[in-house]
Structure formats: C-alpha cells, structure tokens
Length: 96
Image 1 (cartoon, one colour):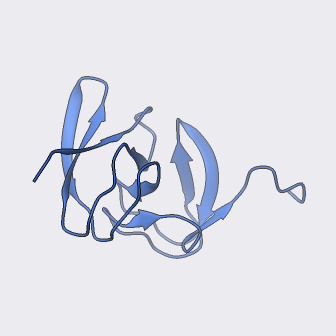
Image 2 (cartoon, one colour):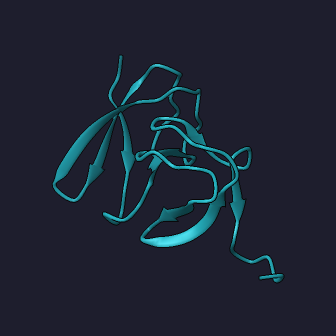
C-alpha cells in the first residue's frame, strides 16, 4: 500500500484535508508542522475532501485552517468523511 497523507494547518483544526484518494481502512499519515499522527479512515474519501481527526459531536463547530467553516449536523467519528452529509456550512450563506 502506498503512503496516504493529509494536512492539518492549525492545531485547533478538527478535520484534515486529504492530498490523495483513500479507501476505507487505509491508514493516513496526518501531518501538522513537524508532528505526524496516523488515522484509519472509515470511508472511501476523495482527494481534497476532509475527515475528522478529533471526535466531533452534533452541533460542534468544524474547524479547518484554524477557522470555523461549518457545524456538525451529526456526530463524526475520528477517520470519518466530513462533508455535506454531516456538516452544515456557515460561510457564504447570507442568512446568518
């Protein structure tokens, strides 16, 4: 298996962004600065998409690049795809 990687920009982030496609069960090396962690993903996830690197409960803020980008509409487990099925966007809506 080739090495899979993801990026976390800010230590406050609770999601990581993939830099390659992954399959359920793949172990992904999550890099933040000089440190690395390994997370087993639980879904097939495409390049550029996000997955949880911390447990997220329904209603929690989704933090990427140190900024709030959305709100969890359902619990998101570490390694789970974090996308429109479980995140409500808080940017560019015009109604908030």
